[in-house]
Picture 1 (cartoon, rainbow, N blue to C red):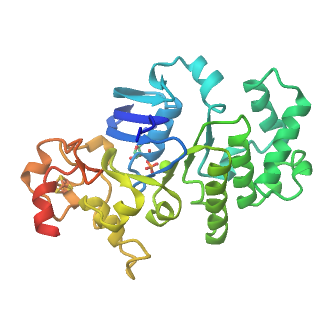
Picture 2: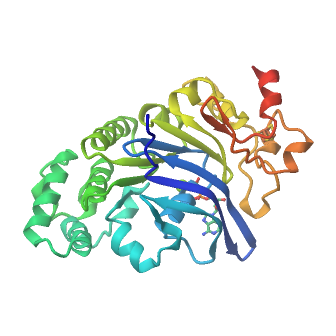
Picture 3: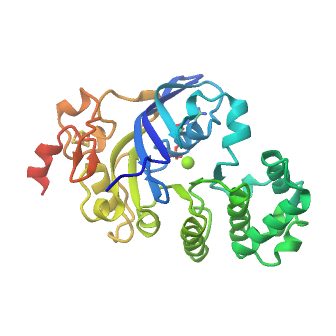
Length: 329
Ligand SMILES: Nc1ncnc2c1ncn2[C@@H]1O[C@H](COP(=O)(O)OP(=O)(O)O)[C@@H](O)[C@H]1O
Ligand code: SF4
Ligand SMILES: [Mg+2]
């Protein structure tokens, strides 16, 4: 059986940002691959570098950011090597759609919805007529179940609820016919019922439009519902990845185990993992989870835990993995 090439592969991505307080080493060797037609979840606590990772993939990094190593391959193109003009004209917003975390911040409050989205559609497909763009957008707004889709074009963002704005943004992300959609915690700002509806919609649209999706979240419960594969990151390092079901049924990395153990579905306690994600300004060498890891020993802080080892089809970046298996199993 031939295995398809990934539509998106991030390899050895290392990124820092120069700040007034020093160099923030935000990403340190991020690795994952998204197969065509799949949904890959990127999961980790707040502050682990998820949004920075997405910005690096989309080429929208803040001032002072430097990619020190690694590659981002999208459908055969090396995105990190493309000039900004190419990225904005051919890739971002057209072949890669983006659904942001906060539907309240993502839309310009002073322009009507139609004007905002149709302008992007015209930029990416100038050859199509205004009526064609309008028709396509109305069709998409109907598809995402936005009430009164045609009239919505003439309304301002504040005239929609949070859930409706997120539907609008999903339609906008699909407007130019992308192959890949990247969603950064798109349901975090929504109530539980709306969150469930949006997750179901994203799953349907992925199949219907033949999309691939990179879905970022801090919630393993969301990953369980939506994602085919999962990549767990901690403090800018990939710690474990593999098929979601297997990863959640038998987590191998101590961080994945800890995240799962304190998830509300499995624990009555509201207490999370003791300690907190370290500041990237004080990133230690070796495994960044060491100060919070019950299994840590001196060797863990000496060398980086990037093993590139597949264990039962999964990757686990823990230097003591073999030893742990006999201790924890
Ligand atoms: N522009 C920036 N300058 C300095 N530090 C930043 C910048 N953007 C993000 N960070 C830091 O990088 C770390 C990861 O942030 P972020 O990517 O937003 O994580 P997540 O999305 O997982 O919550 C955090 O410690 C954050 O404070
Ligand atoms: S490398 Fe060491 S500190 Fe890091 S998760 Fe594994 S056992 Fe814990
Ligand atoms: Mg974020």
